[in-house]
Image (cartoon, rainbow, N blue to C red):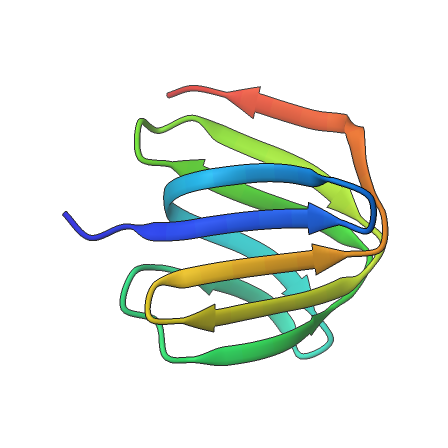
Length: 93
């Protein structure tokens, strides 16, 4: 099974790192859904939720104030000035 290597960082810390099967985020062009094999992308994020679905099915959701999302060769990097970790919710299926 293919997977994504995901790293989410705020200006002052690493928020999340690991392998995932799906990343959802909101860009200035609309809602993005990133799956393994996605074409390379550089997007500008707007304020909203970013959801990462790990390989085990657990979903983590945080709120960002904007930032950037990069996708290349199944590596997803999310950089935000501020990530509201207090909003982090993790659910399992």
